[in-house]
Amino acid sequence: MRFGIAGAGFSGAVIARDLAEAGHEAVVFESRDHIAGNCYTERDPETGVMLHKYGPHIFHTGDERVWEYVTRFGEMMPYNHRVRTTVGGRTYLLPVNLLTINQLFGTAMRPDEAREFIAEQADQSIEEPQNFEEQALKFMGRTLYDAFFHGYTRKQWGLPPTEIPASVLKRLPLRFSYEDSYFNHPHQAIPRDGYTAIVAGILDHPGIEVRLSTPYTAADRPQFDHSVWTGQLDAWFDHEFGRLRYRTLDFEEIRATGDYLGCSVMNFGDVDVPYTRIAEHKHFAPWEEHEDTVCFREYSRLAEDDDIPYYPIRMANDKTLLSKYVDAARAESGVTFVGRLGTYRYLDMDVTIGEALAAADGILEAIGSSRPIPSLFVDA
Ligand code: UDP
Image 1 (cartoon, helix red, strand yellow):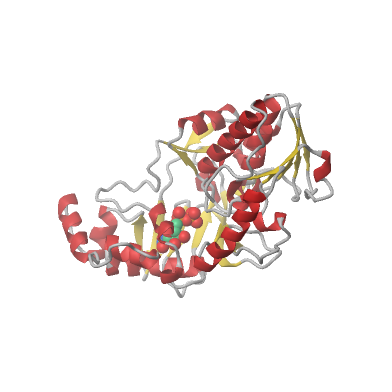
Image 2 (cartoon, protein in one colour):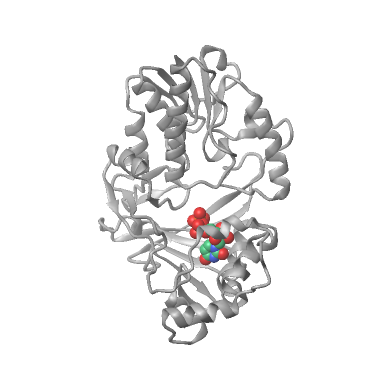
């Protein structure tokens, strides 16, 4: 069969590869002039530093299938992500751990003491947290929440944390030990040659043709037996019911000599500091040495129609609109929706790859048993 695949990020590339390996033909249309979507990396010509052009991407997973898959296409270098945060003129460690707690409260508690102390701080009256703020108050109490989460979240989402889904907080652990690794997953790594090289490796198959700077349009569809759409879900339907909202990011470059931050990511929790964080990209490649440095301040705002979409907002009203598109997607035939934009979800890279592999399995199974190919494989 001949597949028209919209998008050359991880979702589109992984599906194209699996289909091509099964003997099908895949044409990947990419509206940008490069592959790898928002994971795109390139070397800065001035300093030689590998830049994550659309913001920091740290690969972490507990999914062995996904780990085996990415390591097939490039060398993954061990990288243990650690994040610091500056609030009220002081610097602390994230995610919130025993040192963060002891520093904030001026104490020297052991794990069981800290656990008991935080349980006293926590708002026990909240049974089913309905939003980000309630989730935080239930698990850590007001003092920790105000210091590290309220300001940052307000800036990142542009909304009061009472209007943000509780699920966003569940991304971050609260630790009663001095472990300050940002992620818990057994595999944490960054590709030695960048993500672009990994995606290029995935797309490098005789059954795959990549067309850069070429959006996939309705006029292209009849040439293919089936479409895979990894673009914005509502764009497939010409935004018929209205636009799904996203946060976008603006990056402000800082160039310096030596070490600017002393770490890869420094968050800024104060609401009156207009940016959310600064990333110093050479620290994402600790195996490299660079004399000069490049950092980016990140400013978050609501995406306008032509901005690059980053974070799906998924507030109650966005979800109402989403459900209309999900119904429309389920009723559609000849197309499969996948990925962060195609399913309007906040996805990490490993989940994106895992779902793309599962979608490709599903497509191949449907073909094998002569059943129609489902338009959605996940509960969006
Ligand atoms: N967050 C926060 N303070 C921080 C870091 C994160 O309040 O210092 C909240 C914020 O709402 C953010 C969410 O936790 O959107 C998830 O953070 P994560 O670091 O996973 O964000 P990402 O790196 O995906 O932007």
